Structure formats: structure tokens, C-alpha cells
Length: 159
Image 1 (cartoon, one colour):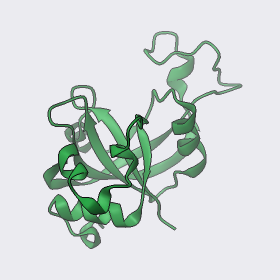
Image 2 (cartoon, rainbow, N blue to C red):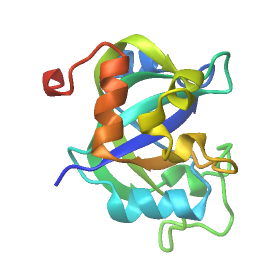
Image 3 (cartoon, one colour):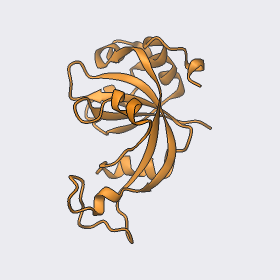
Image 4 (tube, rainbow, N blue to C red):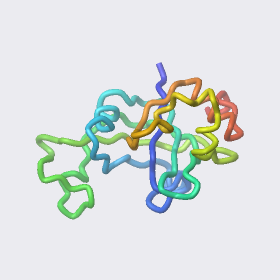
């Protein structure tokens, strides 16, 4: 069974266009236990991802990606030169995990946060709930399909 996710990245840190250029990437640096648990325990190869640009004007969903490698230890957590270093994490006892994702397709038109807020059928998405700031969030299949349609894609054309 395929699951659906939303993953946030700052536009000036790692945009969707960079993912397309790179072909795939590891999703490192997540330092929230709830998000870590989703990557470690729930995200599976083949799951779809809405790639969200945060901390920009306007914040928006830019493209579709797919999980291409399931959760494994985030090696940046034990690299003392990394911005994501955690002295309590080690290769023997990893504290943080990551997944790899690959681009599937950019949206023909980005879907802004305001557009998501203004779509009644998306009113239950964690993205628009007060206090919800997780960088990784589950998405229901129907929400994923609605966002694809809003962005100019038919969900069936993703393969």
C-alpha cells in the first residue's frame, strides 16, 4: 500500500529544482522525534511526496517526489563538522534517521499555501492546522490527488 507525505524544504536551502538536477537525495538533518519516527518506521519505497517550499513568499508545493530508499541512520548526526551534528548520536547508536527521495514530476503550477487553505476539501491537512510545524507530514491519498490536480497534473500520470 502506497503512503503519501509532504516534506518541507526551504527554497534557498534545497529547492525542488536541485532535486531534479541531483536525481535523488538523502533527506538529512531532521531533528524532531515524530518526523524521525515517520522516516524510520513508516516511509516506504514507492511512497509519494509533495515537495513543499517553506520560508518563502508564497510558501508552496513545487513538485512530486518518491521515496527511493527506506529509513537508515542519518550519518550527518555524528559528523562534528555538520550543521546537524548531535553528540548523543553515533554509528553504534544512531539517534536520527533519513530516507532518500527522487523527483517524479514538477507541478505545472505551484500550489500555494493560501490555495491549500482556501480549498475546503483540504481543510484537515496538517499543513494548515495551527501549531503544526513538522517538516514531514502524512497526507491522505485524496488530498494528494486534489493537490496534483490543482497543480495541473493528473495523479495517474505520475509514473
